[in-house]
Amino acid sequence: MQEQSKQPLISVITICYNAAAGIERTIQSVLGQTYRNIEYIIIDGGSSDGTVDIIKKYEDRFEYWVSEPDKGIYDAMNKGIKHAEGEWLNMMNAGDNFADKDVLKNIFIAEIPEEKVFIYSDMLSCLKNGQTYISQMSFEKGHLIHQCVIYRKRLHEEHGYYIVTKKLIISDYLFSFVFRKKEL
Image (cartoon, rainbow, N blue to C red; front, side, top):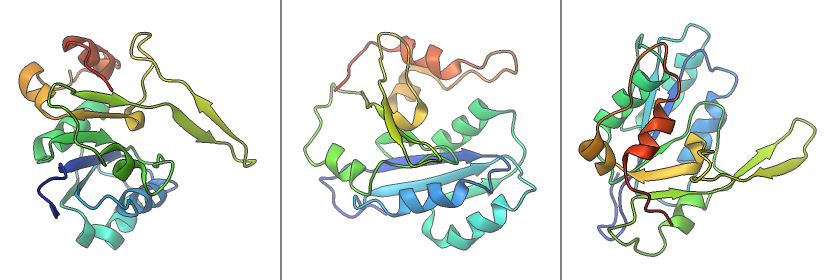
């Protein structure tokens, strides 16, 4: 969906499995972004709860989606990354959403220097009672959450993909320490 050559293509990847309760909110949040140079990819692990029916409602607005068994979260993330053509990646998992419709536009309104490879923000959470709170993210403390991170795809080309093993569930944490810290 690349519209303007000055704006980098952002690949937003949603991974899910039996996520019927939250997938539509996530899809609408991504598709509702005012930044238009987005490639949207959904990797479903073979859901059986109606998730696929919800995805199919919007499938003409995705660049790629698949529903098939995988080996867990990191395998699904790697599948999405391998299909991504964007310069930048964001993992917006099922049930998560952008804080507002202008998040990506506000990030990419100005050109980001080539040496900057990793961007993150704090996380806004909304409780069921309507209250909100902000959780501070920290690269130094290793406290980062997928939906709060946007990074250049070339990091995977330079340092490899996420480690896929049932015994290791911190592959994203390890990956963030493989490359030299360069953040905005």
